[in-house]
Amino acid sequence: WGFVRAAAAISCSAIRLYILQLCSSSSCEHLCSAPGKELRAQGLNRIGNMLVPNSNYCLFEDWIMPLLDQMLEEQETQGTVWTPSKVIARFGQAINHPDSVYYWAWKHNIPVFCPALTDGSIGDMLFFHSYKNPGLIIDLVGDIRAINDSAMRAAPRRTGMIILGG
Image (tube, rainbow, N blue to C red):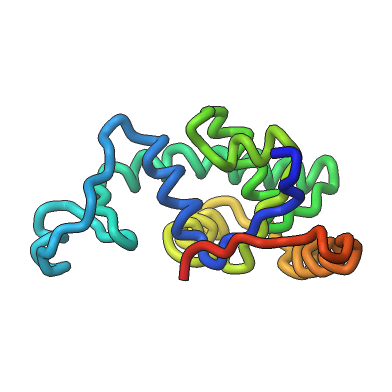
């Protein structure tokens, strides 16, 4: 962790998948060749190369909604400006599990940048929350500034990146 100053996720699929796995005692299964229609009939969802039971999404909703309520309260009472990386850090803090990369990123104050935080079920939860308890604001520009500022301050020839996903 000593060499890592930031991480980036192109979409929120990896974030969601780790949280879904940690919210459930049942493990996700690897992808099979069954068509989506058959999987849905069995109560399964395909995320990349994994199959996730519908029940994990219910557990995810039960986990994330109170967290979004707390974040809204902090925004209103403490003036917290939430960026996607701060949201992911809060997820890591709330996960509080050593098997989570987001827990370790939070623990070592390493921002995880994800410009597509609203992709998939995290976006769905933010959408539902906006009707149940409106007002939570996530500032995308704050992260754009932070990642670009970090790149501009990086030491020449001592900077590298690992790009995952696609």
